[in-house]
Image (tube, rainbow, N blue to C red; front, side, top):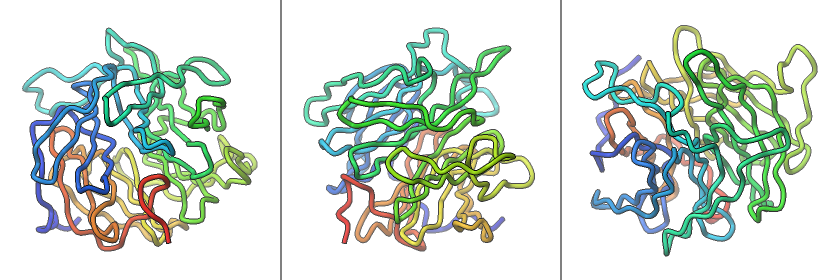
Length: 315
């Protein structure tokens, strides 16, 4: 793996496990601080302000059709102790776990509304990341929770932004994390953390999957599985359709072609880069959460990112 790009620069530090970056049109970046239980605004000059404090474990974030920020809240993590040589990172379900949920935040007032706490097959356990489809709904992953002697099986859900519908569409799937849509909206990508596998699900309509036959474990197509020990976290899609997956342990952003034939790694300066988003002019700037060390970093990206529904204008 090559060296960390010289163009990478830190724009904020002192964050408590930042995730879910959203590059706003005014140049600010919203991040969740999972360890602090907040939605935080990082101004272009690096200054910070708390937008909302939903508590629990706000994890993924996206702007919805009503202009509010929708959050996947995992209900809370247990963390490594201060000074742990592996760094600050989640290691299981919090003792004061408050339940998984989907929330939405009024960015003007900071008011937090709980939108969903359960789906068609029971309570949400650990919602992680989400993406809007531009058709009134969104897809989100539920990674589940890890306890001392057991672990939940993960799922993917589809829900309407107005609170009128939620249903489970993929089950079981092992630790689903990052999620994104292809440029034409016909393919849903989901990254599994513990297997470092990227799956593709063909869509026939909003929340409607055209399932692959057995031996697919859940109807998805395997795009790529990394050799060696890696863990996939959240992801973003480029305008050219390539998928950029934050990759733990090795500490990189893995860029994967839609057919899985091309896989490249952009090194990061720590083992826990958890997410990437695109912003700036022409969406040609990447914002990356370096979570264990509590930083938000940025760099020019080699290809522009895919415009996001309800956030970036589309041509």
